[in-house]
Image (cartoon, rainbow, N blue to C red; front, side, top):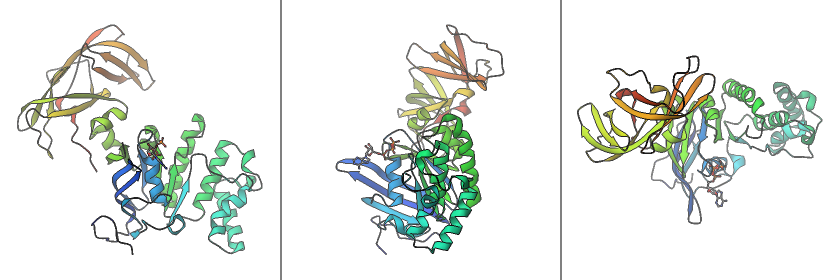
Amino acid sequence: MDSLATPLEVVARPQLDLELRGIRKRYGDFTAVDDVSLQVAKGQFVCLLGPSGCGKTTTLRCVAGLEEPDDGGILIGGKEVTKDPPWQRDIAMMFQDFALFPHMTVARQVGFGLEMLKKPKAEIARRVQEVLKAFEISPLADRKPGSLSGGQRQRVALARAMITEPRILLLDEPIGALDYSLRETVMLELKMLQQRTGISFIWVTHDQNEAFSLGDLVVVMNHAKIEQQGTAEEILQRPATAFVAGFVQGNNVFHGRITGTSPDALQVETSAGRFYLPRPVRCTPMLGDAVSFSVRAERITDSLSDRHANRLSARCTAVEYFGSVRRHIFERPDGQVLKYDQFGAYAARIAPGQTVQLGWLVEETVLHTGAVA
Ligand SMILES: Nc1ncnc2c1ncn2[C@@H]1O[C@H](COP(=O)(O)OP(=O)(O)OP(=O)(O)O)[C@@H](O)[C@H]1O
């Protein structure tokens, strides 16, 4: 076995489908993936989420064996594969453009992976029939990709990827090319398929709705690094960094300095005023430290009581109605913009132009404590 570039001992952990140990990939002077570590449990649905260019696809290509990392190690099913070619890894890959072969029939296309593995012809024919049936594309068996709709092409690409029953399916923006109207149905189907087959999915997307509704584990990347990984709820409710808080929908992010500490609270001075935060358990910020924190738009209220220690006044500049929520946008003279969401079924109370006192509880304020794995 090749030794890993990291000094870590290789310990087989068969319960993990995938383990990345500090992988790094450079193109000349540019680092596309920087010290990325990740553990994917058996049958997990993992979404790599982040803005364009943050390194999601490069990470996926390293797992696939299409790129070789400069440092770090990759284990699939407990076996080190860092230098193995793609076909020796227990994976399959599906791309955004589906990468179908234009001159091949659907049936041949779907069986291609088994042909490459030199399986007997009779076995290939039987498996192709089964898989075409499972993906409800049997009537398309003799058609070529050019005559298929986007949704049909997507099914063919998926059937082709899954026929070899890989341990891990790598999907790069797999529904990015589909109409919006189709996406929700396809997402639900894919989630059910993933759960039924127990194959781990590593799904790259820049769409947070996709990531949060599908992923058992969501990995947020920025500038080649992992900023935070966790469940959708952990990331939405406890963003670890100002980047994550700003990237996911619905957070108000503040920057300031610590001006007071007590055993259970921190006092932070910002351009929008003084605010109070629960003192974190795992780190001890010091007086004068620069910090950032956030509060979610639905945690804010304009019905204030003595309990709302965090308050500010701001002018409403816009109200947007989304059905389930009514979002108010506020601005302050110091430039701080604030989002305040009300349950959409409630009657409108605030109109653009009004200046309103807003507040939230100390315990609803989240201090960003840095990258969290
Ligand atoms: N072969 C290459 N040579 C040079 N730079 C590259 C190469 N491949 C990727 N990069 C750069 O590495 C960075 C990360 O690219 P990557 O495709 O992994 O990002 P991404 O997060 O998947 O973005 P997107 O969502 O736009 O696909 C980008 O700045 C990209 O230009």
